[in-house]
Length: 242
Image (tube, rainbow, N blue to C red; front, side, top):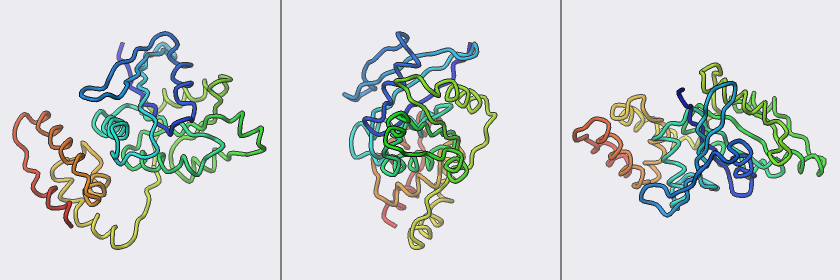
């Protein structure tokens, strides 16, 4: 049986670990990410006779690789390419949580937004318009309460449909200043020549413009491993100084 890989991303304290435990139960294990002192939690669950491997990424507020946690989460989404990335959000702090969600949506189009803690939001008289959010952001939005096990079946069904390629997404892309957008347009074709369709060229161009040299090193290692030979990365290096 082929196992689909599902990544759980989210800010700290969004109930991400509660959801992970709810889905995997005792079928989980922990260890460290290779070369990192960051805990890796992984487990499995079965839905409609299909096995899923669930990876609980470190809780982060961003994916700019300013910490080991952020670097691990970023690299897994971009380079390991999970079949689905579920961004777990706190229903009572949507604006703060959307920052990470938008970053993930720049990195992959296989995204589901999972709005957790709906029970807390309802206690505060808050209403989440999930359908409007889905229309605006271009990805599925599912409301749940992990600790009360509400909405779990809907989330599992959405994961299944996305993993099987039955959902087409059009993730919202942030538009930056005209100056930055112009630089992205200049760099993106060169990035695409090197990475092809393997990795998100626009997002890589944006990170290189921001001087993300750790990404450049990781990208070079990935390409060397895949192609089994030296890869010319001079264009990308120069792009960092644009």
